Length: 372
Image 1 (cartoon, rainbow, N blue to C red):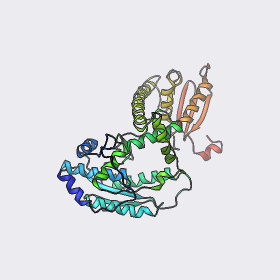
Image 2: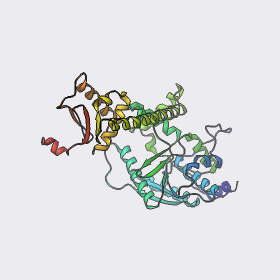
Image 3: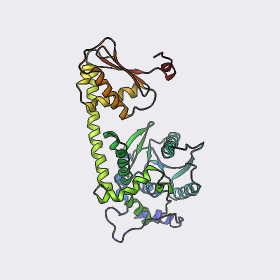
Image 4: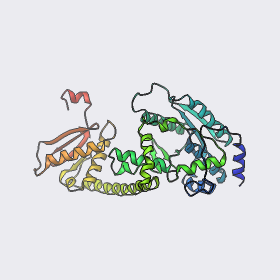
């Protein structure tokens, strides 16, 4: 195919990277390279996007993302404008060379490239989370400045499986165990993950066939961090039947269940708003109590997140709040006085005269001074 030959020639002199993948003589469905037809299917939902930011670190997954996005755009004749962004977190000296290698391949593929740097002091704890937030902040800024409607990341089925295990270990609820979505909104830009159903081995095989090198970030194997430790457990879990395919399937089923529960919560919210002349930020206690616990937890989380000013409410704390509400009202008639008064995530939750009220809480200084 002409497109393949053009890109193969352009990258034939690309420098050998830190690590390259190897293909079996007879590739299976799990190790076969991703073809142009595969790429057209994987990226089909976004062919009308005006411009797309590609998050490219230099690792195998993101290098395959850039390579396949370029081939997809070529096959479309007129596809979205592509901008590759590499974020240098300033944590490894090798990152400068890796960003330079990404830029070289981007140039061969006729893709604009920018390297953005996370500047400033780095936290001593929670570094992976802080680095991730910094990376998305810089990607969103790049998308806004270049008129991009979407940001593509190269998360794979393997990443999805690891996310399920990570969230399971933390006791996440249904929404958390649904793990990553194929598309989600982030700061007014659509965050898209075209490879969420693709095993990493296929992306490595794709690069191997094209003769494209890639970097291997040592932090991906550093046992000081949670994800690498859980990643090391994956072979043992796979031997017991909990392989990446099965864990990703579990996430998909839980996402389906979560979507159904959200629809039910929408209906419950409309019902509560329609009865007894409900004012904004309040529920009828008896009607609320009659609902199932899962729907009540979701209703509380929505109301607290709307009214609060201290970030999203944590699931465990909302569950504890619901238990406290049930204890405070169990077998009791509506009282003119407050049966419960509690703050959570910057919201004030109170029960009085047969209603639940959820409103913004006073600032912490005023609460400490007894002015709430």
